[in-house]
Image 1 (cartoon, one colour):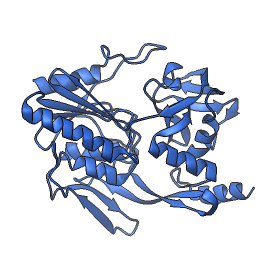
Image 2 (tube, rainbow, N blue to C red):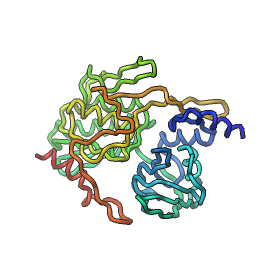
Image 3 (cartoon, rainbow, N blue to C red):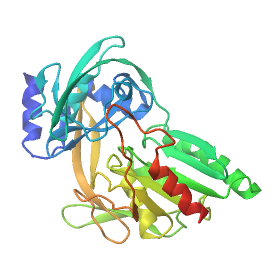
Image 4 (cartoon, rainbow, N blue to C red):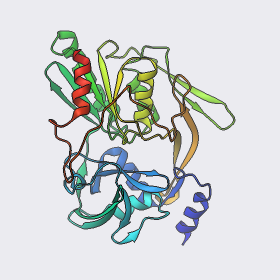
Length: 327
């Protein structure tokens, strides 16, 4: 009852990104950023006060069950998600490996029910592969280990680029739900020269703080395309938006999620927590993308047949991103 009262008190602000977390929920939040948890392996978000699948993780139980980006979760084990916070949804969907959870999903105007067996999920922040002379770096989140993992990948790409083994790069930010602001700035610095504004944090009294590139990045000159989609949110919108504003890269794919606010995470006694919106962020040219998203320079949709996920052969967004680099 005490936790319920606190949740109600905080929710009265009518901001879906400001919420109280019980000790269990706070632990789950930290597990997300650390990349280790037990559940179905899907990134969740809030849109129009509905619980939305931002993205199923690669090779996760949710992906195997056919869950898709954009699916709205209307029930969990038969209980309505109406008025749930994001962390209430996460706490109900996660659980011990080997246990089952039943999700009722709304996909367009069609409702479907899927049963998913939970597993132990451990997700790296970075996936790097090569296709011909093009490096393809997929950034999954901006979490605890992201800068370290990114550093290893960026150094490898830099070495191969200067040796002539590769001649271009694709940065894949699809289905990246965001994370730490500082990590978004750090990664943007790889491509944007020192002294240039990456993002501005603004408070309600119009004061703010500017984050500029402060180091010589390893990937300042490599030809670059960036792939975005409806699941790209928050920190991934900072990176893609800044690269677009400086014409450092062509953006390919679909319009992003549209989350332009910044939350401060506060740890409370006995393990509880509070996430509270403290500011909004705007891109270098002054655009606030909240609820609007970042539009791609070249719009490309991936058509997915019922029950399937996108294969490499059918990934038209990646194909277009590589084609641009070769032209």
